[in-house]
Image (cartoon, rainbow, N blue to C red; front, top):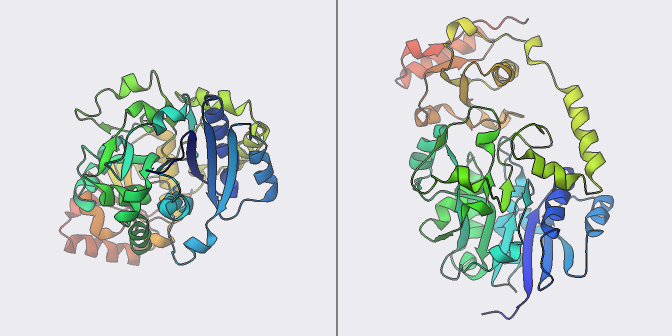
Length: 400
């Protein structure tokens, strides 16, 4: 047992672009601290400029201490691909045992959240017999098969890694950090290090009150269907008294202030030096956003309303189709399939190779490719994989 009574270590990971949102999360945390404790805030990063560092460090108080930790040397041997809206920084939590060996445990928090209760209460949870303490995650129905068959993790126990109590000694004993980084460097996972942590920590997790990690993706108007089991039945009650609101999914409250629970983010944001910067950046993004109907028109006549669709092709055509479906809610796009997923950029959906199509329960595969020769090759490949021709559709995507 390490003698660090009265210290609450809280760890974030961020890049320079995300500093304003970290600032809001940190401000919300500070509003609920107790004078009984000293809070040590550590920010794992590689590229934070001095101006942003100064603005974050200006939030220090008598019992709030903020330290930036450079992870460059520790990450130089690992090439971690980005997936959808998840950045490389999410993997930095896997370095916990390398930087915080003086602590018995640390509290890790994502930056896309706000805190409504003193985190010291969460830190006091006993995780002495577990590698991590975490809240069971919301599981989207279209990911259910992936969790079961690809990760081989029990859906009843799958947790969200955005709020995490890490037992440093056991984390090191089971070599979770090194093994996790190697797994991420070798394979793309839908939820990156969250999936890896679920694999490596399964059967060694202390499950926490879900009010400490109230996820919001099912509230964002995207028609997300949740998997509900007996451990997740009270999710509607949890959001009535959220201790931490976690803005999971590609949709964020700074982009969609009209969504439920976004008001908490803006309440805290208005009280920070980052408020105007957040408004400016998101106003510019909104003004520069492409109109998805200006390019290739979705083939409405070939896809039934409400269908579950896998797009084959993540290029310009696929992006236009995704934008139009996001606007119209005409059907549900489960994933984007591409032979070279590493080349698919700026798509906030699961990106899979053809051999992973079988993991999804879908109605149609829509080929979003212009070149007819390539389309014929795709159709032949899908047929050889046992996929019925009647479930594959393509229409020459003539530019609008």
